[in-house]
Amino acid sequence: MTNINEEYIEDYIRSIIPSNKEYLVEIEKYAHENHVPIIEPEVAQLIKVLLKKNKPKKILEVGTAIGYSALIMAESTSEDTIITTIERNEEMISLANENIKKTPFKDRINIILGDAQDILPQLSDTYDFIFLDGAKGQYLEFFKYCSKYLNPGGIIMSDNVLFKGMVASDELVIRRKKTIVKRLREFLEYINNIEGFVSCVIPIGDGVALTYKED
Ligand code: SAH
Ligand code: MG
Image (tube, rainbow, N blue to C red):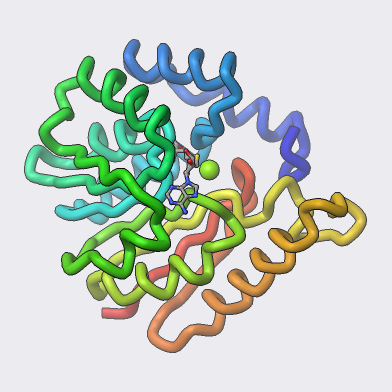
């Protein structure tokens, strides 16, 4: 229960989504057993549809974890699409490498070890799709880099923007999450008003925001 949707809606939507490939199912199992936060099934489906439609050639991700969302993006794009993904936790990276090794996508996923705060300013490439899924308190800072690196016509997808519903209601906010919630609200305010971009917030998973860069 994420406080975003009624449980019966979420359960129903999940019940009609077909199972993923075996190697993804294994990662899903590992993630649930070990409390690694991976994208929810309905968010994965949204990514698949967006990528099939947009056909990005270069993708950037912040927050690799064990490589689950990177693999979802790899299998939804063509053989010449490169995914660059940033992760600061070395243990996560070694699990991600192991997982990616078992798939046909190891040559298309490049993991960069480091804090996105240090890595993002150093990037010099541009991207057609960017998935923001790292520390929520830093989204606004990360977004400012990402919006520069995003090609016109591209999309930035930001995950967990409603953060268990807390972002939408003070009654749900727990004290030690107050700062993150405040920052997420500032972030959503920013992306909804930035010149040259159009954003929407979708209440699936833990809340997803899409930001389109005008052509
Ligand atoms: N995208 C993954 C889940 C990512 S969970 C999936 O859906 O499969 C968030 C990850 O972001 C964690 O592994 C965490 O270590 C990493 N992270 C958080 N803040 C970061 C930062 N500032 N720089 C790099 N990685 C970060
Ligand atoms: Mg997430």
